[in-house]
Image (cartoon, rainbow, N blue to C red; front, top):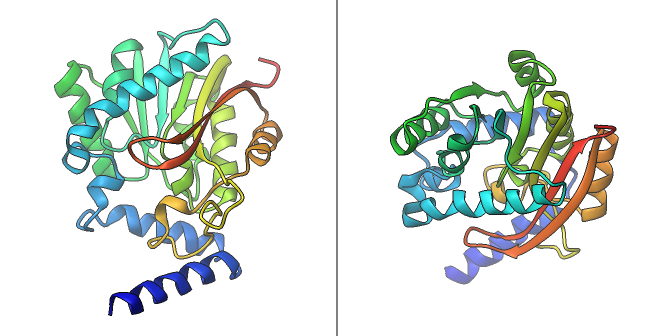
Length: 258
């Protein structure tokens, strides 16, 4: 029985890699359904809630803050004191490290449950109130409309781009990041890179089954997409493996001409 399940799993994986991608509408609907199902066995883990990650939860934020500071230092900067936005804040593992450093922290997420959890964790750990914004994966530009263009000093996004329904969705988020950033703002975005193996390829269908591998990029491909959306890449650092997964790249971006 175990061998049969493994064979079926391998067959489904092959279909996901070679079959035509599902429509954008089908993928975004599947993403909404996935992140709405709080009773799913791995939902709290995938959403990076403290109840899901356990002791690991407390180490995630400091590691991402250190990486962000390292990248910003290449431009002679540090985390700004103004307005910091995290796209995909989940259960607040990063927020508890970033929120105390800025005037206003804004958490954006597809799940209202995660936004509430993030707010509670930041208040519990830091005593700070935060602003939260619920986003529909089909219309990330609504975040710009709600917060105002050019109003964010730093955007960070960790463990999110591989969860986006498609590369089109990623492009939409990058455009929203561009529009949100102040003229001298910066963004640090983490992606899962395609290393040329079948394992590293984007899945393009069956969102629930492949949630953590839906959207991957070759490094040069992501660099070009950023430039096309008006974002200038400055520095890229690779993290082949961390405590949560493998094949991660962090990119430091500013607005082109900023």
